[in-house]
Image (tube, rainbow, N blue to C red; front, side, top):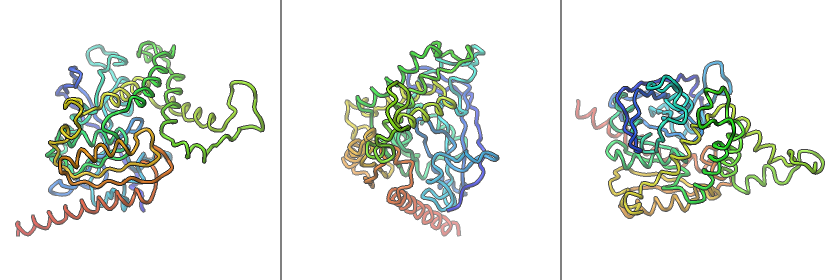
Length: 386
């Protein structure tokens, strides 16, 4: 399969204030995005890909002169790949509050002339979806052929089906959940506490002090990374292997797994923003569309019109298959058309980013079905025009 090649980010500025779920207004914001493939004449082949916690708009391809800049879902999106850019026009949008270009805590607050820092308003999954819909409006896309995402991206796809039911034909939710469990919220809070208690955090205004709460970010990433891997995957990759020949009898790095987690934490602290981490984990915690319906997920999904593909992975204990099945059951109660695949894969939550052939084939087959319908519709339109 070919690479999509070199890609270039784009940006769009919005001066109309965006009302947020918290009651705050976000004015004069910018969204950074990338597009792949070509939009057809009737604009029916557009697919929105929503990103997870530490990803961005850079879904596929690479940047010129940066050989290690491959997009985070490059194995999924591109020419001849499951989401085939020879057929579909794919959009990746960087969410508000991020640290990868869209307006966030690192940007200047026009009201103060200083970085937003901790004053950047808390955003929710629903806020992101409303911002994405505004971008789609500006691009002239009135309905997406599909909205797709994994993990937190899957929450956004699900939210699209509820907030804009007539603007999404297909909803692809991968390794996701209708709400976080108490255990997941607990993990997120421990990670946030690591950042909030770092002496370099300075109540979120560390930019003015020229420092980064690096230790807090490192620990937050280490905690998160543990939850992305399965016990079997950790055992296979690391086991109890030592870095040296014997125990050191100190508090340094004895085991390979310790070395790996510290490496991941160090790398993360070099490129991710601490305020962004706080915001995104809160958005995860707050996502619960059934809350407004007395906990009835079927009622929350009653207004949906899309067809659905849901995929889960057996060893994903962060967003376990049981959570996907809750969505499936709620959709069945609403007589929605859906496909559900539960993939027996050893890689835990991270499986949604990897190349399991069964998973890729499920997604490929689903998009082939979508493409078949688009081509039939185009044929009908051409015949009517003739």
